[in-house]
Length: 596
Image (cartoon, rainbow, N blue to C red):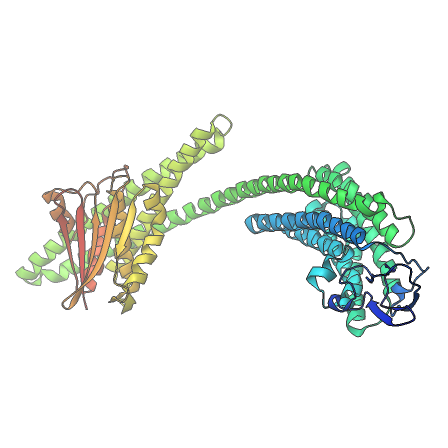
């Protein structure tokens, strides 16, 4: 026997000898109902040829359960169970589809971080929860022990779903920028949905019966939301020519019509039939399919916009590089003044040292050495600095003045060459400044205890791109607890320079080993490469305390030899030693020994 939805229903069956009392109702937990089903039904057996008196006591409790008419039906148990099984099967498939699509779009959101996907997932989840409530899945499987929540949840779930739909519409159609007037209407509806959610939650927690009024308000606001979604899509496509809006219109058309029919049927304004009951589900399936294409289209458009932004950033970067070039020129002039001033100071010292023969000879040797350094520095400043600047200037002129005549491959090659020149200039200028500071004793020596593993791994990361471009693998062999007592900035420069040189003179697809081991009273750092190696003459030249003639790397990389000179000075400041060994097969071993 089935009844309309009501709070509590008691059925008393009397055959004159004994009475049966059966209970059901929407406010009873499922396990307390005579027949544990979402429907308000009781199950009993009527033997033949027996007269029964059946009395029905109805306690509606809430306004939405007040019956308009006594609609009581009798149905065989097998027929009811078959009908209920079909309900569970088809609605289970539909809810399963909703769950799969929600998870699918959630994974896409985590992949692309587009908030439109998140709002769409929330709207799908909201619709799934509502249909679970409507077709009994909620009380039967999700919240079987919360019948009062099953009564009130409509007033919370539906506004939440409409709120997610509105947020999805704002983010997907870009209403903030494309449709500012319509965006204000959407904001008002968002506020209305939020207020309905708060009101629904308040009435649930305080157990206040405003359900009749709330359901009407939820239905009206829901209808407005659906109509506004369709209008926003049409305006975005036909007025603003926003291409992804065509998917939005196609996806929502049937869903909006079906949802409005469903809402009107729930409010009792249209009759209950197949179209008013199931058209919304058909529209939802179509929406899911079309939006899969629409979100993909929007993602592609977003990628194009990001590409435009990246080009603009590159333009700004070129402006910054131009300013940096001017700054480098200014620093070059300042450096030249410093070198000239230092030379004058050295000459003045030479006059003072002429007092004795020994001091004179020593002064001559020092002056000769410093003049060699000065000549090398002038050579670097006049040639190594000027040539790459001129080269980079030529490349940039070709790119800017003949941009239309160059194909993409030529543009990439010119940009790569210009970038290479700039990298070389940056490295050279940094080394020159470090060397000049060292010569003028502006670098303060501040040794401290350092963890070897941290220092090595940091400098490997800094050179990762250089090694990666040359397909060279750097393999550290480190003691986790080994420490060094050294100046942090000087040690970073030493390790970075040795690794950079090892990469420069290594062949493609080769390996570089860096080891740190404890010796009695000292720590030894070894950089081992599989590169071109060197002759004994080159080795002796590198070990001399002077500027060495630079060699080009295996990929024609340029250098000045200044970096190694600074390394040797920094090692000397630590009281350490620097040695080079030639490997038996190929490559070299650079060793730095620092006292503990």
